[in-house]
Length: 301
Image (tube, rainbow, N blue to C red; front, side, top):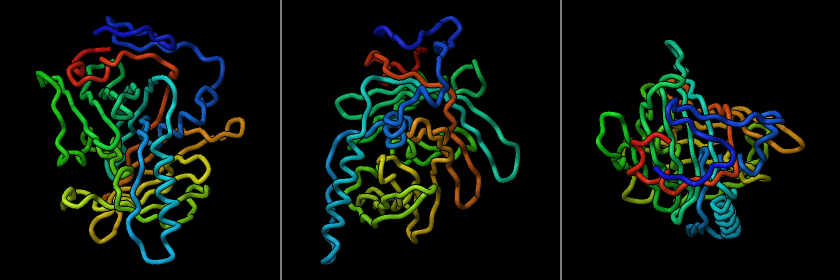
């Protein structure tokens, strides 16, 4: 695989280890608020520009719906110049049983369709990859997966989007794709408060013909009113009961700006949890587009 020069870090192909330069400031100070706003609106993952269409509402709600469409459009335009890299831990925290930790790496960029990311999941630090995914966000979301037993990467069917990325994990391709941010059938429910932050609350419904009994039929999402970052989302069943909740678990205020430290995903039926915790990051990179091609997923970066 060819790649352009990566100024912020270098790879050792023999050791398959990523070397990140020593930072002179703390990890939190190194990451600007703009990065986390972008990452949360796409999980590590930016949203493509676009326009939401508000559905007809009773008299008196049209102005609010119009404002909701503007907010969603602004969320889709959140972005950051340059490519980026994250290393992270996935902590599997079942209500009963032993906790486990998986490790991962994520490379992110933007192409003509929108934000795109390559995710590699490991069972142990320095071990062989368990799964490698390519996640294409935007109006036409798609995901590909490659495992060591596969000859080539396979397109992940929408029927498998809700499946755990790893055994026992509560994170799925749906959580990375966040397709609900482009669903046109929505209600802007107004102001609320999450994590002590003023938030805009939305109810977004699955497009007709795309929902299934095993999939969420709606998502209730809360976006930070000031920074337009996703604070929390709830996947709902046909009765409106929550199936899974994704929440920003830990924030830290540095120089007047809020920084993300971790996200928690909780299964509301089993109460099992998975935590996504960022360990290291590098911004302002210049990655080759080949990194984000399905045919390259079996290759080691």
